[in-house]
Length: 286
Ligand code: NAD
Image 1 (spheres, helix red, strand yellow):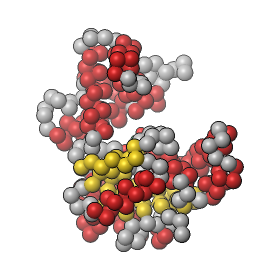
Image 2 (cartoon, helix red, strand yellow):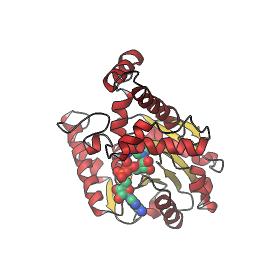
Image 3 (cartoon, helix red, strand yellow):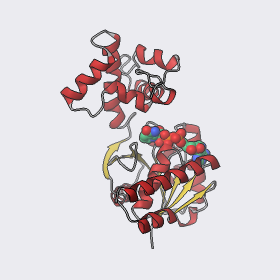
């Protein structure tokens, strides 16, 4: 019997997790409260498999079978058959706690309850459903999900070994490389990446060099595929600021993790990066 997975949230990440799991042969139920988002995800899934056929990464039969494995729902309609539920909804603690409440009430008692959160404490989410905290785990995919190999797997002190092992196995079955980490603000990825991005803003603010030069130096000198300031625009400057605040509030060190004034200034001016057409760089002509 094929594995059934429910993916809750059909945005950028949830839709990517769904197509990755379906491409790996799993039956997936894509859930979202928004019918528009479900339609957007459906279109993205169709476009992704079409491109894979054109590039001869899969046959037309495989593409059809992949799409046939996905169902779309505004409710947790596959809860009964799901062995795994992956929450990938909006990064808001109250929304996530509400979804975890629904999951514990509707999914089987042995279903793993995973979250794709970038910064919210896995322990706090687990504590919101104390009887099932051993089944709660962070399963942090990277964007774009079909391309990026890593899944950062975050266990809280209450996450059971069985939940950890099942999450590692599922990640591998999806063609990913899981790497475990403990539950600290920003986990490993954002704990290391965001202060580096923040420091690039400090270098710019202090007049060490302009954005093109900072990005050029980091690309050519440190083998970065993309400079830190260009990457910040891609991630979203508001997201970068918010993750710095999570580190700042969660780790102490009054100065070390404070978001750079230059970053905050751009966010407050509404220049959030690619998504608004302007951030560190101007994208209005592209
Ligand atoms: P998004 O805004 O693209 O999508 C969020 C989706 O959640 C929307 O479709 C929304 O309708 C849905 N949603 C909201 N409330 C819901 C509910 N109660 N039930 C079901 N669906 C609900 O967001 P995203 O970028 O896909 O991020 C999702 C999660 O992944 C967040 O926790 C984010 O931190 C994390 N994440 C994002 C990235 C990234 O690069 N965007 C990378 C890694 C992790």
